[in-house]
Length: 132
Length: 180
Image (cartoon, rainbow over all chains, first blue to last red):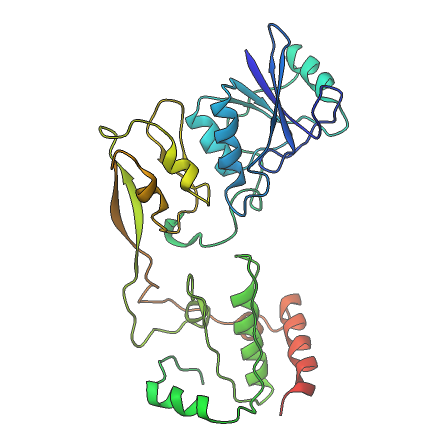
């Protein structure tokens, strides 16, 4: 399985980045072979829709699951459309390796709804009457 | 007394000819949802309460909502439409060019499927131009300001003791020095 963990750096010793849309790097780890692919977050600086852009990146890289701190509503909808399982609750106090080991022990639960409230992803702008 | 309406072009022309001495307070900012309209409306209300004559001009091209906050009905509302993309699944080859063209990340492409419009589309039509198989059609999306508006009131008038009202009145008070 390909597990994507949001990271502050390029290797497993880097700290977890709790943010998804604005994460620095994604480490895509093949949990069977332990091979790691480093993917810079090119959508990090996006003015809008960083969450959807990042979901596109990790979907294109073939991730099956995402482990991060918090996922906002837009990103969550995109990840759901891409059939990527979302695991939240990873902390910046742990390294990507530690987070991955906890994941393997089953210490994270798959999220069924986005836990990131307004301010994450919703832009705050132009929400009126169902406009995107 | 607040009224809503449009200035006739000849009046606007006349205003621009004059040496403008009336202070103009501009409330602006790039980020949406931070309270530009809320501050503008309440600041205007607070200044009116202090005895000033105030012209509140809502120049927000995307969401001019001052009338909503003031509970006003617009005199000459005009319907406004923007384009939204409608992607024909049978013509789409899931190449992802439209997703790359979208600078607002409003489109998402689940692997091998038709892109989904899920973000904040602003109707720029870049996706239509980028699509190599002409699979994207225009749909008209109504973004007009609602014509019938319910009762609303600036917070400084409705809740004079609310913390926000105190802040806005203080702001109006400090601006006094700059006003005639």
